[in-house]
Image (cartoon, rainbow over all chains, first blue to last red; front, top):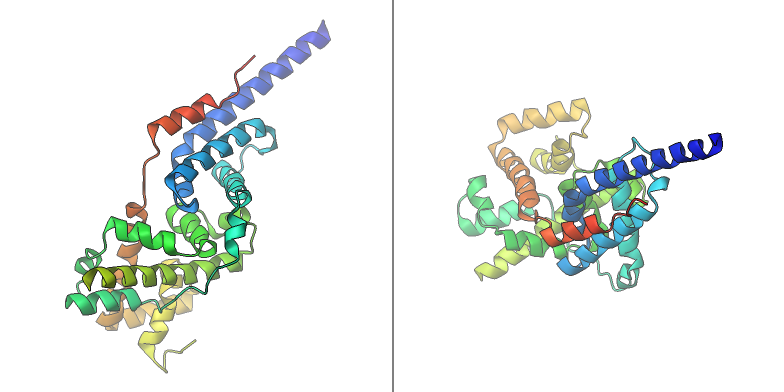
Length: 193
Length: 80
């Protein structure tokens, strides 16, 4: 009898921990989707990826260490799934991205606008311009921008999620932002011409 | 990497991202701020970058579809 009641207690504790884990993970779903939306190539793929991530997380909840960063843990699953889904095969024809210096976008916008007030210059960029330019950034760079600048992950978390050194996170972030600005400048100048 | 004495605005441009990321050393930060206090040209470009980062974050923020949220909740493993 003692054994049966110990078992029952253990099962009850486990059920409680699992429910707690699931609720905590679901509470982060909006934030996970926000990042997934721009890691995946399309909205549909982002939705699939998030579902697959949660299915896997719910199955392997025991491998999560309570008290550690659950959002980073979920994103690590998601990133691995994204790579497994064939993104690696797209890696081959990667061309060298165009990168300009950090003031390039501002200079181009101010030059064509004739105004240098920074808020007015910013108004030249539409939401679509930003989304399109971000999707044009090669994914090695985009992943880091999405995690750090959009997902608010620390460099260390981004390094863990992507399984790359922290120095690589920083250099890709700096280069990636320059590529993004270059893409933005190109799209706005194209619209204007 | 340029230096302050070569071309101050080019050097200030190189420091912009680490400045906004708060990863400069104390000395570099003080030097950058000293230049920014005096240089309207660089100051404008720093302010633009700061606003751009906020704008990018807002522009790409797409709420999760309600149907997806429900699908995720349905993935929970039922209690026996």
